[in-house]
Amino acid sequence: MDTRHLKIYAAALLVIVTLAGGCAKKIVKPNEAPVPGFGMAGPGAVLEGELQGVQTSLKTVYFDFDNYTLSPEAQAAIAYDVEVLKRYPNLMVVAEGHCDERGTAEYNLALGERRAGAVVERLTALGIPSNRLSTVSFGSELPVDPNHNEQAWAKNRRVYLRVSK
Image 1 (spheres, rainbow, N blue to C red):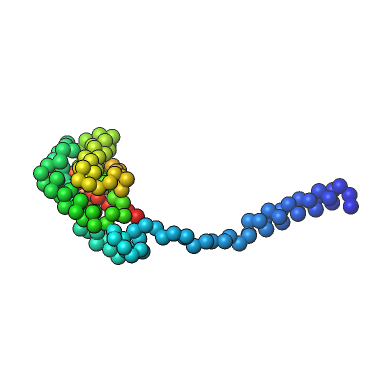
Image 2: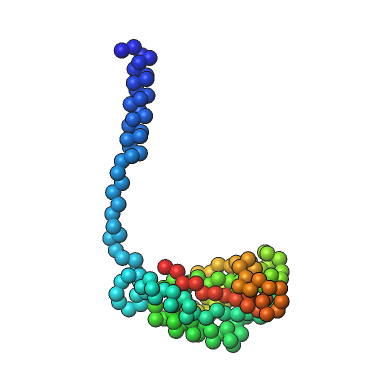
């Protein structure tokens, strides 16, 4: 066999080996341990069907214009949410900060983050461990009411607690 044929043979062999390796069967192992709080029996366990019920029972926290101070109504809503969350100690929560459309995008993102932080701080003070909580700000990007009046703006100035796995 001359060197030309040897090079072609080697190249073909390399292609075959490469393709065969890419087509190898992958062994998929089942999870060795269940995810805590989901599909498990026991205190604090949340089944998939319950997740939506917990989500709908949490109260939204509303804020005054250009403010992230917790009003007495906001504090009452958070106290209620704490009682719900204490029944499900394996549940993670994301505090989503929102603003009305007034103000720049950058300002509203920062204000939404401060609002979410104020709610998380209060949840923690009332006994929810901080490792169960996180924050995100959407600024004015996700209004619940797209109208351009005070009633709509009041609905959009909020922190929504979203349950997560």
